[in-house]
Image 1: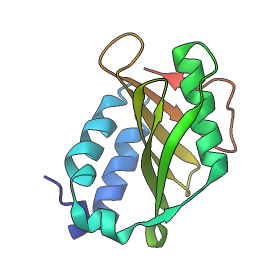
Image 2: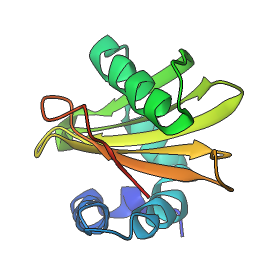
Image 3: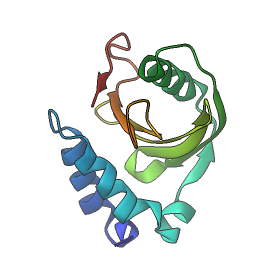
Image 4: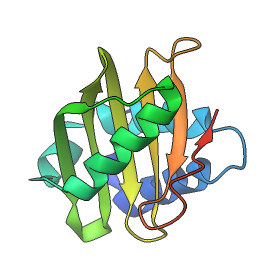
Amino acid sequence: MNSASQNFPLHLATLRERMLHPTDFEKAVHYFLEEFAGDPAFVRASEVDTMPHLVAVLGHVASKAIGRRVEVAGALVSHLREHRFIHGNAQVDGRIVLFFYFLEGDTGMMMLIPGVRGEGEVARFHLTGGLADPQLN
């Protein structure tokens, strides 16, 4: 557990594969939380960035999930540049937002905790792709 920094290419490939599953997004969420979230070396290897375009997309996706326009607050965006991987957290409407995004492939995942219909909601998104129809699970 929490060993992503021991082999970034392997763990990022596994995370990406799980994220791209057609329906079971929770596998990616659990893997991210288990292997990345508590890994201090992973956090130290990442540089803080602003990425307002990514934050805007997160606001759009969260608004779709909640069913009304909401604003993202306190976004912390971190960039693992060598591996073209972005991750972070924010708040929206009293909820926690965790996210990660692969520059290669233009695909990311957002977790909204608590979700509208339960403990959490997960959405896969693209920055340059179709924002009008994020896949919610």
